[in-house]
Image (cartoon, rainbow, N blue to C red; front, side, top):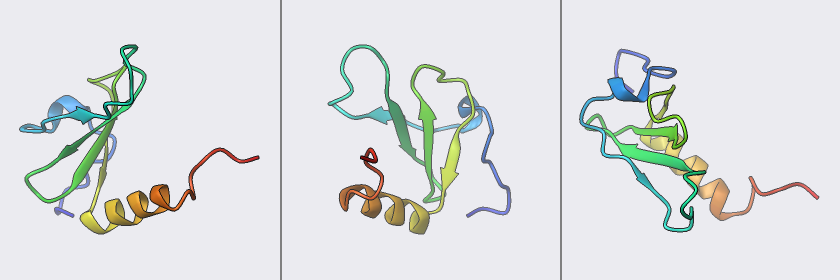
Length: 78
């Protein structure tokens, strides 16, 4: 991660970020968007509030999170 912790910054402050969302999100805009940053980090924002706060993850944090999603660790609890 860079020397500056950018978690909680307005997503608009992450200059150069190209946001993308899942093709499964539908037309309602109810989704999470991600952007690969030039630092190698990955930013996440709420598509309903594109100027709102973003979370910024290191590459290792992002790999761990996506791995957990793939393994079903973050699905709904019964």
